[in-house]
Amino acid sequence: MEFYPLVFSPELHNRVWGGRNLKSVLNKQLPPDVPIGESWEIHDKNKVINGLLKDKTLAELIREFPKEIAGTKFEGGDFPLLVKFLDAREWLSVQVHPDDLLAQDLEGQPRGKTECWYILDAEPDAVIMYGFSEQITGDDFRKAIEQNKLKEKLHYINVKKGDFVFVPAKTVHAIGPGIVLYELQQTSDTTYRLYDWDRMGLDGKPRELHLEKGLLCSNFDDIRPNLPQEYPTKQLENHSITLLTENKYFTLNKIFNISRRLSFTKGKSVPHILTVIDNSIMVSGDFETIYISQGESCIIPAVIENYTIDCDYGAEILQAHY
Image (tube, rainbow, N blue to C red; front, top):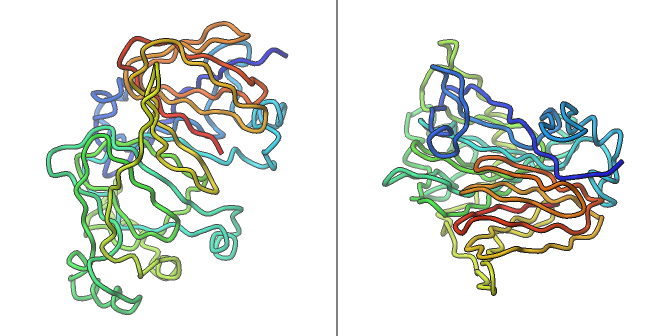
């Protein structure tokens, strides 16, 4: 089998807080008259849309070619990373995710959910909610909800296009209206809603809250964090690269100002995930050249040790691996 970069079809998710901006910002094709909040780009259920492996899901490919696709570092199970785009027309719920140990204890799941966001578009004065405005306990949190005073206990941070926010598990957070972002996370959909802004769900009923488990997972020492931070950028001969995060779960780079062909050597331990956030690129190597447009993602299988990227000036890429 000759392996090549795998481009996947997105999986769109209808959300009460979603909108229509994935089309205007990322050229996504959306169903009419539906609030689309999430587009899952790289996930076990996504299907390949190019080449001989077309229509295979990522999960099927990993079962059939575990080391070739997922690398020698892969420990089995589902693909450990999930890439998605989010469009927040309204506030997402105030929520928290468990870490690995709490996910195993509370849900019997193999991993928790540490994530990060790269802001692709933001309306003027757009904000996220991250941590708390003052010292607070679980009991204080309950009382604030009962007294309708929770909003004043939360910490709000202005964000703009190009900002990056790292969100470790146990961080109480929410994404505010008017924001479109890229999210890289551990593969987990365990979310505990703590507060939902007193609104109804798509079915006209209040959405379920998970207060008990959520409070067990919450970091109440996260007081007025200074975010977003600046990250160092290397200006190289033919491109610029910013290391956005490098942690125990994933690494994420932003590659931009590309003026001519880039070459990458990565070894066989992990695959690379490329997501084009502006313009388009061509990926070449010992395989047929693959074209990736704005808003599309691909996996460079682990077995491919070398690849190159060509593009028009102005392309921006997010490059992730575990």
